[in-house]
Image 1 (tube, rainbow, N blue to C red):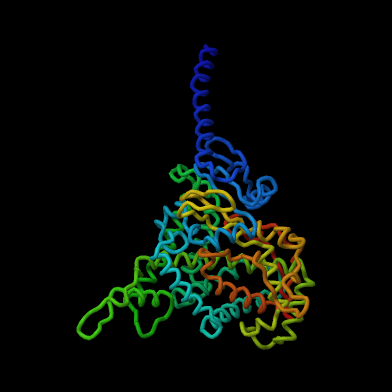
Image 2 (cartoon, one colour):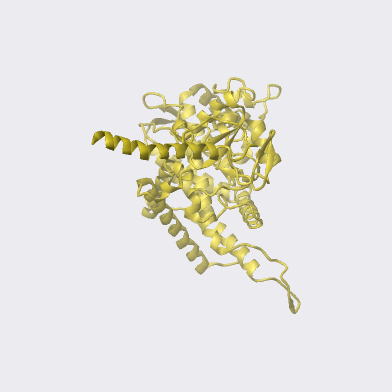
Length: 500
């Protein structure tokens, strides 16, 4: 009987195994023009070998396969780009051909709407350009936006004074500060830090980011989406809550909208939509001379993109700035000395002071290079057949851009794993310099939409806290090796802040 069962099991099992290996072999060789890469396993491909921080694994593979290679990940073949030269060739020089987005997990939630996940259509280009112009207007130093950021920093500083130099974890304080800046831009209002709806919003955004990473395999093994997994439920529930939060504020804006007094991003988008829906008149003849493709239904998805893109990444950058100043107190002292000399301790730091603070700018750049807030860009997709570095990538190829490999490239940076702000200073006149291999906000058509605003927030926070406080580790120094996830965030740590 046992022999019979074993034979039956073997008879059923072997064909399945052979079928899986045949499928894996055939699917891995569908496009002979793709670059070679590591061999994975049937069905799951190379997913089991990526580890908790795939960007580091991808960087190690460069030594064996070069800066561009293919990796089988579940049901997808992914082409991974590493290093400054290859990534700029694809995303900048051939940006149009690489501007697509693969159909991935978030597309199931937003239908590919908004900006981050939208395909590069004419409609996408219009709403992205419009949104970028608004953020630049808000982020300009002559606008009210600097005042809003400075105001939120001042509330943060008040809370920091209340700690009375006792150990504190500032993560939630930073969350509230950054989230309120985005709320000011999008909704025209800031929230009190103890507001329950505001606290719930921040909590749901945090839960969303915690679970979105654990679902990354869903992008390559789509059947996982339909399984009753905790992460699936968490992502759907948090996205639904955030969507409703945004919808309620859009509805309120529509009810109180005044075209002559736009209050925020939502009002400006409503204005653009109204102008597109109601063409201007020329005498008695109505002519469609101001036709746009702005759609009020797109607004909620764009606002959510702004909130996701403008909170977690900036929070991570600010938290890393604290970490590096704790680990490198000598650098902290040099920044403070420069601030004392240029600004003093009484006057608030402004964006107009930035050009006179080259060492401070260099420190911020080196922190962003080292911490790699976004180690890998949101996946791209080729929109047509395209040649890259001697390989033929067919239309619809999923592309990974490994920014970590750019910032840790020994050909671009001397001792890349060493924290050295001076690398961003010109030795001749001590002015700030940059490099094409510095791309914390990515590059090309899909670069960070809120780069201008993010730079303002990071600069004003960093300079304001070091102008007024000296920070020290409460116990051992925090680790420079952060948590894995879409956003590279430091592990939890405490510090003490002593007024200067």
